[in-house]
Amino acid sequence: MKHLLRVFFILAVFCGFASSAKGAGVDFHVQVLDPNVCVLNASVCGVFDSTAPIDVGLTALACQIAGVPNLPSDPGTYGCAILFNLVVPPQDITSLNLTFSGLSGLTFECDTTGDGGVASIFSKSSCGQSGPGTDTFSFYDGSFPFLGEAVIYENGVDPSLFVDGKATVDDPPFVPTPEPNSLLLLSTGVMMVGLYFAKQRRVFAFARKK
Image (cartoon, rainbow, N blue to C red; front, top):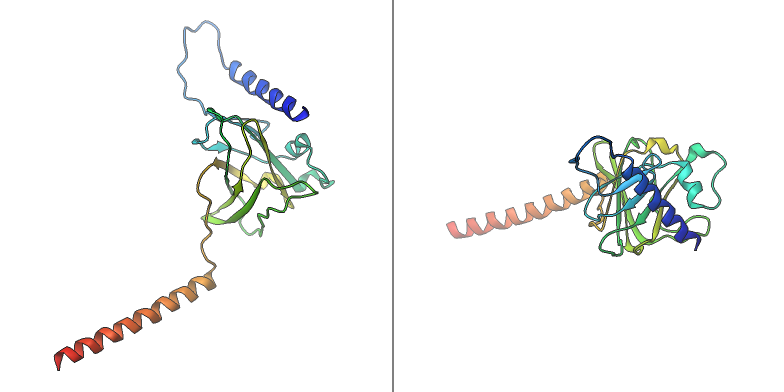
């Protein structure tokens, strides 16, 4: 019941933000609006369209609103975003991809073990750099239903470092590129195979000449 009341409260907030844009003395407005609406510095978001990206941010306040247990005493070391599944027509959200900039030089994990006894929605994840200065976190193999709530929780650094946040749902998960050592090993293997076949072609050509 508490969870349902929170959903209705968030819906009321979203509707309030949408209605406050109306002006007086104007016959009509033409606007292009983001179908997914976020409040509280983009840390509380209603996902209405699963095909559209979501501007998302992390704040300590969102963790407190979500009731995340065992939060650190310093609010500058953790942050959350709350997503509500309000997709129309109703459907489960089965994956979540997040991209942020500003994390260069930091090491991180995207585990699915949960925290403080709270179970993770998704059982699989992958994360890594997806471009210059951009890191991507993917969570999949799970779902949260229509009117369900998902909490994105980071613990260890100032949430203000997670800038330019974008979230997409129900997209293929991000696959990290191999580490440099793996790339070197792969290229060495490809080179050896290439040399082998080049040798075979030379032998075959020499045999034909004879």
